[in-house]
Length: 237
Image 1 (tube, helix red, strand yellow):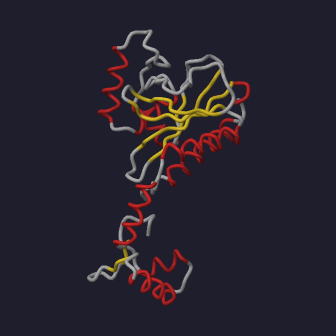
Image 2 (image 1 turned 90 degrees about the horizontal axis):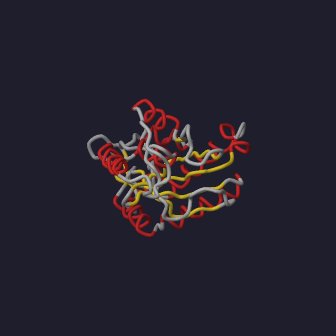
Image 3 (image 1 turned 30 degrees about the vertical axis):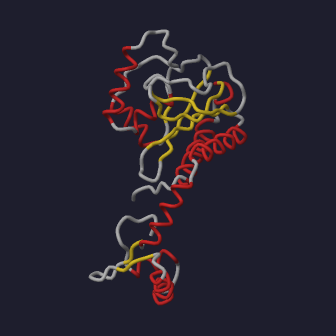
């Protein structure tokens, strides 16, 4: 039920659970008594009940997103031996809040702000944030002086590029801010389906070559997906 938006028929619920309908119905009767589910009186379909919603709200209130994300970043760095940064949406755009892994010669220190179009982190935010927010931040970036401290240089992004990022679930940049070091970023979503942060991996080209597509990018997407799930995100079918 947590994975479905619409109320569900008993027959379908039983099929998904691997139970006979009569057995599934017995469970549903018990769940209904304690408010975990409700049954539509007209159609007879089942949906999440008030108690389930209360449990979900309580869970959201007690979640510490940054703490969970920091753990995810550390685990991914240990797993891949790459430099990993957690990037959130700040007042001036994508902003590093924590990092883990090998110390590369690059600007990933907490507080650093990334270009919306000239970095992997910025591009993934550009693909998943509301268009008006992205446009306003890019206009701000264009007006900045060259010594603003923002990492990366503004580059044109087409709708085709943004659609591709949404399709594959991660972003990279052809010309990285630091020569010889490539980056890949994946989005993290919250319970409302909004992108709230990005996990970004960095590595030297000679280390990434031949291993990024097969190993590192899937590990990045998996880590971002797992963190999204911990933040109560449920992908819409």
